[in-house]
Amino acid sequence: MKIIYSERHRLHHGEREMYRGQLVPCFEKPERAQFVYDAVKERKVGEILEPKEFPVSAIERVHAPRYIRFLEQAWDLWTAQGYTNDALPAVWSIRGHRDDIEPENFSGKLGLYSYDSGTPLMAGTWAAVKTGADIALTAQELVTGGERAAFALSRPPGHHAGRDFMGGYCFVNNAAVAAQGFRDHGAERVVVLDVDYHHGNGTQSIFYERSDVMFLSIHGDPRTEYPFFLGHANEIGNGEGVGYNKNYPLAAGSSNALWFDALGDAVRRINDYRADALVISLGVDTFADDPISKFQLREPEYRKLGAQLAALKLPTVFVLEGGYAVAEIGHNVAHVLQGFEDAG
Ligand SMILES: NCCCCCC(=O)NO
Ligand SMILES: [Zn+2]
Image (cartoon, rainbow, N blue to C red; front, side, top):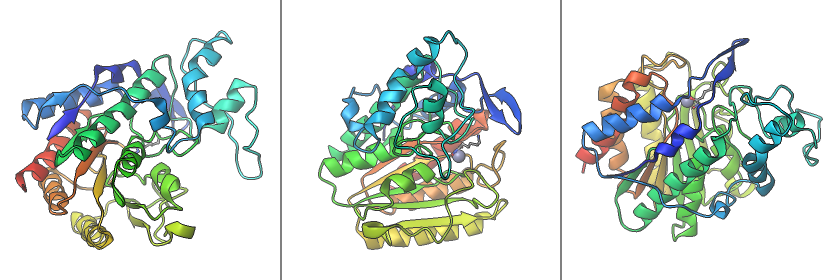
């Protein structure tokens, strides 16, 4: 399969994130994409291409223009106040507050558009994020054009980013941008399947009222696992979207058998939905040795996952999400992609 990658991801290299009450070095770092690049290249998974550039309007198909304007201008606004360190929020809009008025104060703006203090914004963040969306759209365009599958090797990840908020290391929802790209180019029904350890709260919230994009997610139970506030089994969609959202929360430490039971049910639902295209939010923080997650997947499971996705026989875009066991992330991603390719 074709792989889309750009060195411009390096423009986003946050210094520190708030973790358990302390500012610690960022888990989401440039080496992650480097290791994935090295592994897919070494294993000859496919030709590696640079992304095409798309208009920012393609991002605004799923994100609020005022949020995108903020992302574009944030670093200049921050440094205009004399700061040079990464911007991290310290105050948030929460229940009972208003979110229809954007504060003039930068900290207020940043808090309006954030939901955690783990997602530092720095000089090159917007450039890297825009390229990440271009990577996802390039993958979607290739698959719409006839490629069986493509891998969007993008960072920072995106599945926690909602219509108008960032968080969980995510700014623009690359998987949602790709899903909408499929919809805007002939696909009637699109599935986003999120196999990252963490619930794709951003992706769910973007498509929650829609029946043309079905969202399914297998993840650590939000009662104990990040992002905590969305991802329960009783979230089934709203309005038009009722029945088109499916969550499989699994207890931390769940067995691979349980994980694949969930995948089996998701596959059945995807087949019943008669999708025209499939987007996989491919996080490999489900890895047994991941430093911040608690599932048990290893190479055999990643290859099995790839094979079961191939059996759907759908035009497929894989979008990189999480995975923090940096030395192994590349191999784990490659195992999924090779499992998919080998299943033919
Ligand atoms: N800072 C809290 C943990 C963020 C998890 C990010 C992730 O891997 N999401 O899939
Ligand atoms: Zn994750």
